[in-house]
Image (cartoon, rainbow, N blue to C red; front, side, top):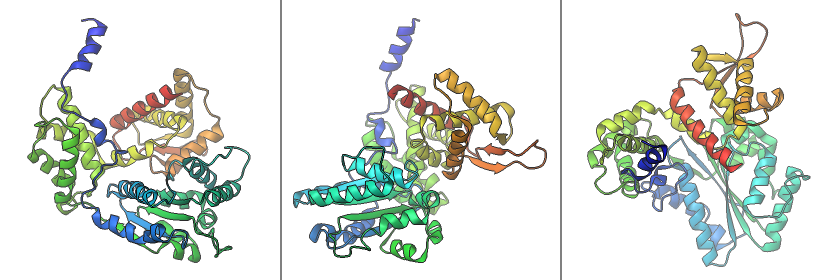
Length: 409
């Protein structure tokens, strides 16, 4: 069979999917089952932003574990609130910052300015100057901003108390100023907030919106809704959906993580396609779960925010660990493999200082593990590992992202 025929057969073979993107992490559905309570609370908190804009700088603290719907609910709320404001002739900008991607105060304020379409050069200004320019831009245009800082725990750890204080206490010196900036802080838990000083902590801890893990029955509703959009009619039945929901439901001993449940649905659909099945069976779900762990899903979210060289480094770590078959490897071995991969991909490798910074960043993000070398290792170095995450599926996801980032360059 010719190469062309092989490729064309793949393009034309039947599939259970109608819209695969519905099962991707970045998809925002029009309806959010079992998050009505949280949407109502957010609406109550930011009621004044619509009824009496500028009267007060409001904030909310969204708290919940991974996969409990924090990000998708906040994004949906921001989108709808912006539309409501527009209908009332209020220029409200909803800005969503992921603090995994934007790791410093400078990166955060630059991204805020870009999303608000403020014409600021990306070089030559300090973070404080950029933010002041952003404030003046809102004043000139009589605009308002609702800024969501997602993974805010990570920003606290990386940027520190002073950076947090700078962002949130902007109106302290000018209490009579029109309050044009409002915040939603999104965190996994409250533990990191205890590292802040008393004044900053007290400011943040008000207006908590809690997201609890999903139960099995709640996950059934979510998976049914996604399935109707994602698959062709008749491709999946209720017993398969219930099986996935029971595996992951918090009341059944699971983590209550909707992301894991939805990822299972996606992988089960792909398994059905691979064998040419018109329906998704329990066996396809079992095969999907064999490729999947909650750690893979959680890390996958973070992978989207890594730059190309961080992805190459992560692939290098996997290559070395697979080769030596030990839980940890040395910084030197990783760096050597990284330089080899850079030559294969056609990129100029980064120097040691930058490589070390990338490694430490991925460690803080929870993607890799690092520890100092001990007895049995010549000299002092950093040991690097990847915990209990299966290496093969993780490498597949990295390869997909490397292809996307290479294509966009």
